[in-house]
Image (cartoon, rainbow, N blue to C red):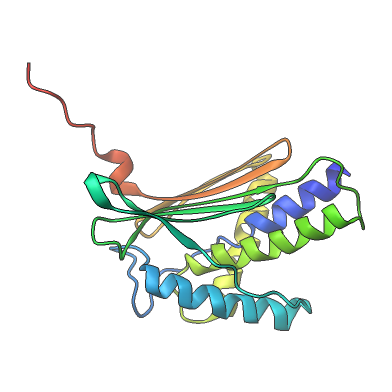
Length: 195
């Protein structure tokens, strides 16, 4: 069972081979929300066509409107798949994207928990592919191989720079997390109070 969980986690993380460049997004500025949602729907269709699946795009809801200095946040929360997109002050550019896939306890090959997990894994692929700025879904899918191989070589950890984003992938126990963060945000020191 651990092997199946690792294989599913590796497949999940494999979506992350970003080859930056394309309309509506830039390797210098990041991925726009409008293009992310467009690519997510295209990626679902690509996975359906190439993996003989019948997935439908999930609804990612706005959970914070950006008032009182708080960021605009979109999220999807489920039993096995969680996604959080944190936007810039304009609400149009993704500053961070965190995708978490959790293998449920009691999951065994072929049971309903396993099937739900597999569906969530494919959904996570499409979400990860949507962070890629290339207009061709096949090129965006190349991210899967890159991350799978990187995490296998790194014993569950993988990190690389993708345009303005640092992509950090980790797998511990039954949880795989894929995190895109704009590099400049990580390097900006916290403001210090005078005194």
